[in-house]
Amino acid sequence: MVMICLLFFINFIPTFHLKSADMSLLEGQWVNVYYEKEKDAATDTFNYADTATEFIAKKLGFTEKENINIYIYDSQATMQRKKYGFIGPLLGLDWYIGDNIGTNVILTSPANPGAMHNYDSVKYAVLHEIVHAYISVLNPDIDLWLTEGVALYLANGEEFYKEYLETMSIPSYSDICTRNPVRFSNCGGYTFATTYVEYLDVTYGWDSVLELIKTEDYMLCFGKSQEDIYQEWVEYIKNYYQ
Image 1 (tube, rainbow, N blue to C red):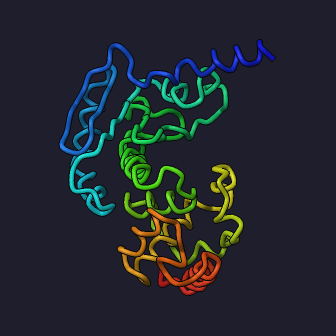
Image 2: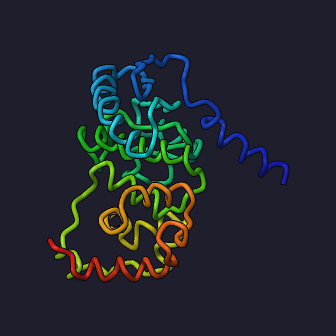
Image 3: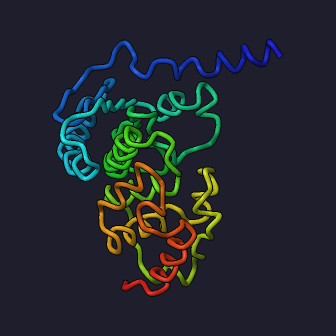
């Protein structure tokens, strides 16, 4: 048992400090970016993030800068180690190029995007993680479906088309309640969750969505249960306009 605990501790040593000694800082109006050697890619990402974050922050009710720090690593393996420790690069997560840890965002450098991404897909992914970072201030334990839906909705995620229903099943109620990121992905969460938040915004207004982000109290926000809202959303999807 002692040996297992020791190995567990050793594995997570890379997660103890997100900022490495050789990182430089770009300090903006809304975000800060720390980067290693890939300065041009980091500067490009910083300019995009600091400009686009103002809309995100104000949409989520923030009027001034929060302590949002973005750490850009030249290697995808380094980024993955900052989340999962030394074992991270061994997990075969080629798609995994960014994440948030509370108000801290970790990102692979767009200059070295890995096998499943390109420069732009990594650069633009930073905004998705920034949404998560800001949401973590409002509700650090928010449901996975809701936080991903809001991040996709506000960060201009993939557009949804009604034709998707010809090949994809609408996630079940239990699917949207899951806290398992693998199940979320496998049930089509990254395709459908944005429409869930879109439905809430269109039907009940953004102020109610923002209150839901903070409280997750469906009766308070909509006068209906979460399952009732789910059934309404299913009908919305079935009659989607695109």
